[in-house]
Image (cartoon, rainbow, N blue to C red; front, top):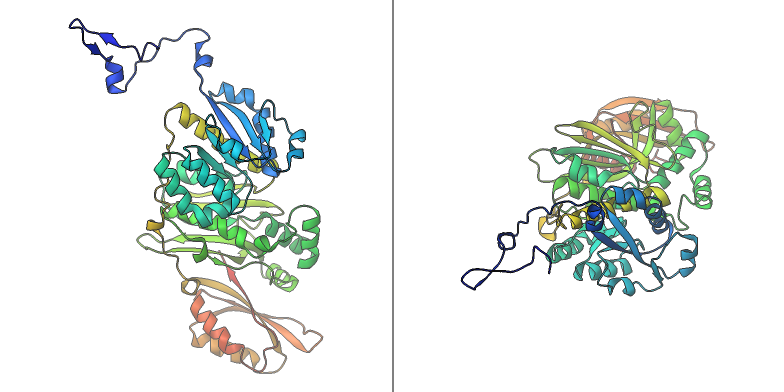
Length: 471
């Protein structure tokens, strides 16, 4: 038994524990040359999923192994599991035990941290819950899992006294989660505006710069690996919605359900809208918007295409890049910008979580940043989209005849919607014409009522295009 655990026999013959053992406080051991490295606690990692992101994690851990040692963090990739075992040959796995069975990692009592990188909300959920239940810390890049199943996962982690980290779930290589949970802990974050889906941003950038149609750019994005074979989750806004739900939960100190977030994708955005936006001094982006009003119980959380003034700081975020614009009551505005996906950027975020948890373990603080507030008993109400206030771009396709504009203006005015500007262009081949109206700030509910009335009029030729304007 070591010096700290030694028993002392008193003069009376009774056995007495050292004071440090009774109090739990131990005096520092005297340092000896070469002893610091020996005392460095080794943390064993089990990685489940060696695909794109998992491969990046393996490469980064291998490349940074000496630097991590120098930082006082000794991590060892002990086991890797993936059904596609052929992937292991292309990775610097070192002496890690490679297997096709994730249970080999879950059943290994020496594994401290399980890294889940398989995606989805079925098998991945089972893996994460199993790992947490067995007292292992878990790291995931799975935004759908956190957004849709987070309450159950964090409750399990809390009961077992272990950590669940998820930096890579939002923003890829950008340290968004750590910035909110740690760097901005002294702030009440009142606003988030974010371009958080690289696929949509790439598509809209190509449509804007090159004038290409949506379908053409989407096909190219799939060929180049920027879009999935089934791109619905990306272009439909669901991927961004998962990330917005996570961010909204973090800044509100409660649980914002994913299904309460308003989501609208980019599939209806046409080249005309992009061209009209440019002529009016705007660009169109798929935007995640979160707003908190001090004293208000509800939060405004939504994802939809938005027109940004061309001078807006987010307007220049192009191609596959992402950005998160945070506003705190003390710090003001902060912009995070970088690659939101990919092997190495997302792998970088996962490794940052590994380092954090390894340091927590070494310092005997496994739950340094608790997440108990992310629970089903702390649901934060989300403001319905009908209640928001915004400026609007309205593109009407109408029959070219006198009185049309007056009729539209009358209905908008009846709902208290003030017109800021009007633009009309040359007609189409079918004798219809586009009429573009920009409004002053108005209630969404009023805009919807007005459009329901206008679209019943005989001069309307197509459904009206509505895009919200964010300043």
